[in-house]
Image 1 (tube, helix red, strand yellow):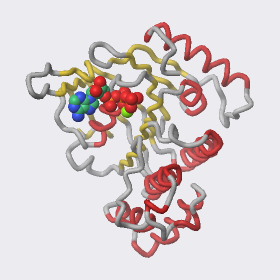
Image 2: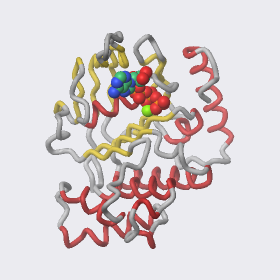
Image 3: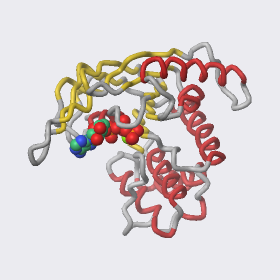
Length: 265
Ligand SMILES: Nc1ncnc2c1ncn2[C@@H]1O[C@H](COP(=O)(O)OP(=O)(O)OP(=O)(O)O)[C@@H](O)[C@H]1O
Ligand SMILES: [Mg+2]
């Protein structure tokens, strides 16, 4: 059972230095927000507003920034955060091509603290969840792009993360698979109660999944501009529930009022 951890982003700014005489580029401008332990929060914003940059900072992959990013009260370091398991599902699968799917997941489990004797059962369970039960011994290049992404989702779930960072994980999947995985994600979340920070530019997806949506817009410098609370939408939520559609319509209207067009929807 994971023990969910809170997330704190305190006045975080990120500047990518210009190369070869080009100007510096501000990708994040003074971002400040918190996510409570066990909460499911979506970040919704147009392409290029700094969503992946923010997750890279929170995961410890990028430590060149101003401000403070912390998880469970501990600043995020180059190797994550002591005492918390963090899983990061990237926009693309990022599996190691020389390892089978099973071996990719084992590699993630190495640092997780789970006894090796329970790895097989754990991996089998997670592969079954993403409907890859028969593909554990395949190499990534023997799988379609969508299957690879599902394998990377299984890898993240296998470590029972305290914090799950997800960067548009379903955007490259066909809609039926994406729907199934959203439902599975919610089931897993309601079981383990990890803290989830989920990045998307799909307003319906954000509304369907989250407790709260944080909206971002492009500056210069990506910044947070609005927040929508969805605690009125009871769970479990269904795709047929007209209230989810109505809420997502309002989310789109709010987003358009900040960003100015519908070109990302
Ligand atoms: N390594 C880098 N060097 C220079 N600029 C970068 C780098 N990485 C990102 N950027 C710039 O920072 C901005 C934010 O990028 P980021 O990848 O965080 O956007 P995003 O919100 O995740 O977009 P998308 O929805 O398309 O994935 C973009 O303008 C991008 O060009
Ligand atoms: Mg991105």
